[in-house]
Length: 280
Image 1 (cartoon, rainbow, N blue to C red):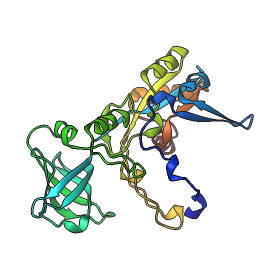
Image 2: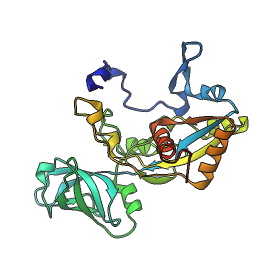
Image 3: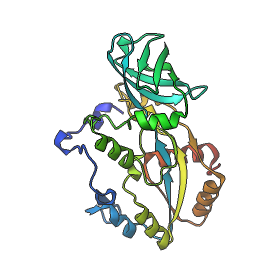
Image 4: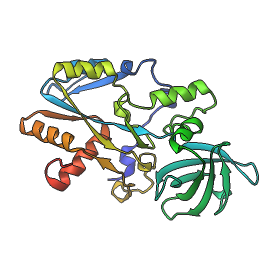
């Protein structure tokens, strides 16, 4: 399939740069396949659309404040470091560096008084670098002080205001986010509130959590002409025994398995494709 077959016009003024005031007030398009109708609703209407014969599968990964802005120690040049994943320790990471032409092995990038980044080497994988983080103390705490939430590339506003930064730390996470490990949010779940989840549970809907840590592949543009030639980055996922048992039982009972977003879908599909059932 050619990538050009996916082309469509999306006016820039229709790309929101800030979230709706309340998560649940976002608009929702509802397609009824049997009636072949389309309705315009709001996300809070989802409580009326999911019945008690359903289980909801959510991805509880949490977004890491992985985007770091710093300066090159030698020249003061502005450098952006985008942490991707740890390698063999908390201090050694794969990352993206922009502009990469300004750095070389042993370059030191100062992020703050608490954190610096030492460039070790360039990696062969699509412009990635291996770096060493230089810090004392707890890295998670430091990243929450000096890091930024890595918003999608179509959100172009700057992280200049502390109020904006605080907003992103809150709103570019799902309300059920648990363990940090993603460089992007599982965005389909951003609209759920604790109230909506409670209403669904009270209705008899079973809510099950899996974990897929969203990787750099979510930001990578498809540059080849044929979609099938595009090489995706790998991602790590986890399905607990409890989650596997509940999903398999629901399938036996003929319940609907509703996976929220592509991350939940590919977690379940990968497990099912390999084993013919959901295994922990």
